[in-house]
Image 1 (tube, one colour):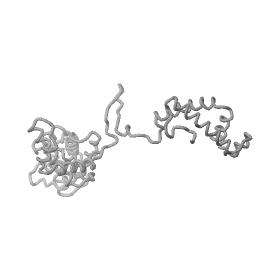
Image 2 (cartoon, rainbow, N blue to C red):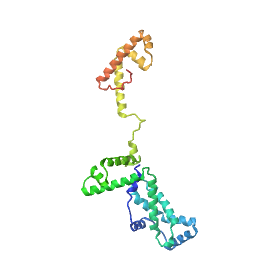
Image 3 (tube, rainbow, N blue to C red):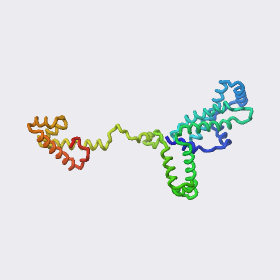
Image 4 (cartoon, rainbow, N blue to C red):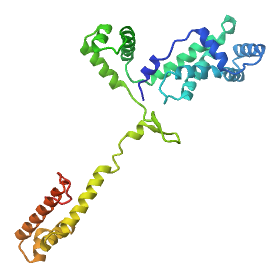
Amino acid sequence: MAAVGDMTAKEPTKDSEEAAGGTKRGSRDQGDPDELASLWRRYAATRDARARERLVLTYAPLARYVAGRIGSSLPSYIDIEDLTSYGLVGLLDAIDRFEPERGVKFETFALTRIRGAIIDELRSLDWAPRALRHRQRQLMRAIASVEQREGRPATDEELAAALEVEVYELEDLLAEIASSSMVALEEVLATTGGDGESFSLGDAIEDTSSPDPSAASEHAAIRDLLADAIVRLPERERIVVSLYHYDNLSLREIGEVLGVTESRASQLRTKAIMRLRAALDAEGLERAGSLPLPS
């Protein structure tokens, strides 16, 4: 999958007021405020498990809201449900740490912890060093700044100057970033057909256990030509080819069958091979290793 550090770097910054407003729109009705306040007092005083469960159910939409906001800037293969589950960890922590008597609105308190829990989990999945991710974000900002200023794609020299490094150092950084990136095989590359069938990166990986279509086609053509060429061989040469290459007889045994010496059987085989190679060469199909007959 794509490097997780790339994902977290793109998570937009939201102020508390905007986030809280979005939460109200995205969450369900939280019920009677007096009842909710009573529930908070009960949990703060007794740490009652049932009260905690009701608070989790009440504020669970907060986790989905934050997961949706963060997920909107991540690759499509990142599951929002996974992000939501990470956010619920932050929600549980917020519920346990919240102090109603301070007069702070819970939504405002919880949003930061939920977002932090999601981002922390994403970062924990990233195997690249954090320093590399920091340099990657610097490069992204440099690209945006130069291209906005120049109105065209930035050159390597301009990016190196913006980062205050040499061009070769920029090239090394790009190589490091490339080697730290991963792509999920489930990532959808395209949707084809009227039925909406999708094509993923995994579908593009070669199946080494399957025969290569072009090689199989050429092999079939060579086999057919070879069969025709063998039929046209002189009788004794055809017998030698058949006994040696298909019945696995030795040249000495073939000589006994034909009533000739082993040396003469070898000569007949060599002549037959040369005729077969010439026949395939005339068709433009001979290539090293293509013949099923050893030379």
